[in-house]
Image (cartoon, rainbow over all chains, first blue to last red; front, side, top):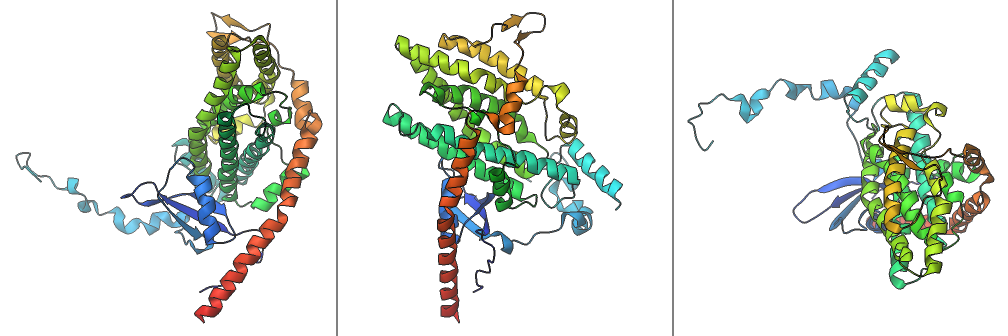
Length: 100
Length: 315
């Protein structure tokens, strides 16, 4: 396991994900500072679920989140750009066709 | 891409109401403006806890005490949402707190007024939070994504703040003669500072135009102020109280209430540190931060020690 490489005086930043109810995805709601994961979860409860907004909390230290580069979005998503046939509406079928 | 092209792409996105996200290219001035505005807003939430915390121990009932604690807790939360949003722009939490404590960063001047009676808790909720909501609702559509999302969360929670404030005043307004006097006195003291919360009038607000173009701001200071006056002028009637403005009257032609001149000299004085409580508020913030230093250090030392121990066990 990687050591907590925190040389600054401050607490590291954590990204917070909350499941608002059973059956739904965890969703990113924001971030906060905490000394460790346990504190991040408790702080997330106090900051993001004061009105029962969640039934489950995930916390991830921000430095472990890797993201795609928005400046390269055009080329990055290009492969899917010309494949309209992946969508059901691409196919022109008679109106009489039912249950499809 | 050249700088001009980046700027054009950026402005096109803003014009089309496509949100700007942290890693997107943005002009330096946009970034700076947002950092200033969001951090000031965060500071206002945090300093705003002080005048109300003053009444937690003296709230008249257990119910009122619980409500006031919940409200002050919300404000701490709002400060945290906003600090996090500002951090996505590349400033650290420590830098922002340093700027607040050194006096470099401002916070809403309304919190430099004292809370003298219990009725002030009502007037703050109704007027101060009311003015804040008026300012904040349009910010839910601000062009910068993290700011807009923080504001959505804040606005949802803020509504109870205003309603509990009005209810406090409503109860006082139906009480004894002394309670009614207290109610009117609080309204008298908080009205003008609340009207000033919308900032300088449009012709004296040089940054407004750019903020509008960037869609950080959607309505001018004077437009929002007028809306606030119109709404409060009606609401005060339900309390059987009056607003302390002899010039306040309905203008049929404009379809708005006219109101008297604002004392901008007082506004500037309070912003520049000469309000009744500037020193006290800042001193309280600095003390809380310094008194908490050992807790922050101990928690970090504990976390590091535990991580090191887990590392050893895994090896």
